[in-house]
Length: 355
Image (cartoon, rainbow, N blue to C red):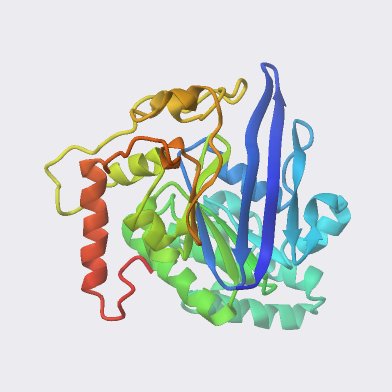
């Protein structure tokens, strides 16, 4: 598949009163045309900082991109001026933020907020921009779009506001859509509707999506590939099947083991013990070692490389070294992988519910 985005050794830090926080510490990943890549991890793992770096939205000061390349269609976005980046932002790469109410201007009518990007990037006159705004509202499922285009954000429900935010993000037909936990502020029913909407719109527009979330249940429904992030680094990457059926990193095991399921509602969730490391002083070796019950001595001394599991699957854990002891999957993780396998077996297209 053809790459549309290629991130190489990205490092982002922030100057604070306590010192330099290394929020993103050498991240590598790529995005193919037309696919959805999910980046998952706990709060503070560097997911949102990574996406803001892709958009050129790292505030300077206190933030800075210390190193790396962000290649969009072969062009390094880290080398662009603010003015040049503003032409990419919204037109080629667009973003859906977590809270729709803070993403929308409460003093502007919905229609004007959608039309703004169309007039700036597409050079449309107001009449054409208004017609396109109505089309976009209809496309994202807003009823009576012609009437509601003149309403303000507070006149919409939370789910409808998120649909408006998606309409704004898609207004200029971006090649890449960055979705930063776009369903976190919504209830479960509305969340499912928004996820279905995004999948449907992706089929129609062929947009490539980077989906940021801490919820692996969401990942199973929307992603083609998954990158698991911890302490500013990607520790495992693979297809959805790789991550859900054959997870390799103990942190990924922890995330899967902490997922609630309908099958074992009486059993306790397997929580990941401890807390993420302080990125003011990143630990030596594997950053997950202090929370990893399977940690080896080398984990506290040397950072693991990305070991190849298959052509699509890589994980940064010393447990994959040829001399490492063989560890059985924890029971909580086995239950979930078996659950996903049984869902897949019952699916008519053979791909399972993870696709």
